[in-house]
Image (cartoon, rainbow, N blue to C red; front, side, top):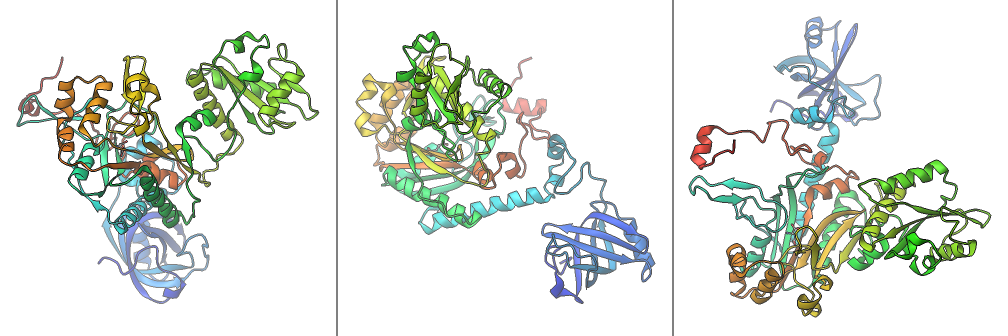
Length: 581
Ligand code: ASP
């Protein structure tokens, strides 16, 4: 080995030992008689000392070293005069006796320190340099720990990790597929899996009743901040289970991860039905670190002559505790916030519950003090509180108020990244109607089972059919989702029919799965967790990119290898592909 120790492990107990270290020159300082170098490797930083008086040649050589040169040194561990209590090796330094330059380096385009001067794009282009920085090392170590903890938890419970293929068949459901042209079958294409969904179900048919896989998935979705075209899932499936069993096993897994990786004991993970999540938070992934739940005001706010309210489906508000002293400017800012196109409200009604017990609102013309007292009572408001109210069509208004609630949570500092609130959202609708394409879509995916008691409604009230589907939400972020599956050919056929597939289309695309159901498919269900996002949440970060060694940018580009890229005419010909001019 080119070293006896790493740069992170030497301390006062090693004084007087002869050691050899290898690493990168982080920084050097010439102080006349002495030269000091910070030598860095994966494990830490050790200070090297070169003495002009005792070894001027070596010292001169040290002065030629540039940042990021790779060197090997041997020398004696000595106690430092100026100790640095901030790093584990801060009490010692190495008095260098031998120095070998293993490789030189160009000056890096940004500083390789915890706080760097490099912009995002530059750091992505030189990702191998960015990865030398501590924050990224920490993130990738965390990622490693999480995957290790997942594997040991599931292994303990008898799960088998099985790999499923990456070259599969394109299906129109879900997001857009990435496709791969086949050279051997001109005009035919593989697709990269959006998830191993059908394969894991086939494994259930095969009798592998506890499956998991930490697996890459691919979705060709439009650009959105913090989406990666390839990402990693912890994908799981079990047979002979109920929804409760799944929530037990995988709630247990999440608790295990928090405990082993963060040292945090989570409480029992609460369940919140989808309909309640929408009613109380206007979101199927509520951030429950703070309350500020919705209160519906139709019964006290309608019929008072305020036209805007009288004709709407829903009037709903939140109580921003202690905000009655908001200035005109602050209230205008909130109004602007809800009117932004991304939120889309027409306006915002506010009611200040003043400390003296009176009310001051934006609708004083229409509502008496007594009326507003009724609102305040409903919203359990106290003097000093500010009520923020939106009105309109039910689903839209709830979504808008959700945005405002989150904004207020942020403004009031109620979304502490070091606090964790985990919950299951359950009983999702099976189907959702899409106005644009005029058809029903599976809210989770077409293999999700309706609740048995709702199956009848598949013919009459499709929108009311609930699914045995569930999401795991942490701090307002969807971390996992899954469902109990259909395991019966007839019901699966029915589902495709509801989704507007002809018999032939369903057969062509999913015949293999429905065929398998005819050979003794057991009842089964599962879940998949977004592994990158889970790591980010565990680190209290909202950027998944920082937890992926080689991520793509927001435009889906790999800036380092410059992909995607064109291919040669020869390759195109071989694949039988012609580019449209
Ligand atoms: N395959 C699903 C997904 O990727 C998860 C599941 O239902 O297990 O969202």
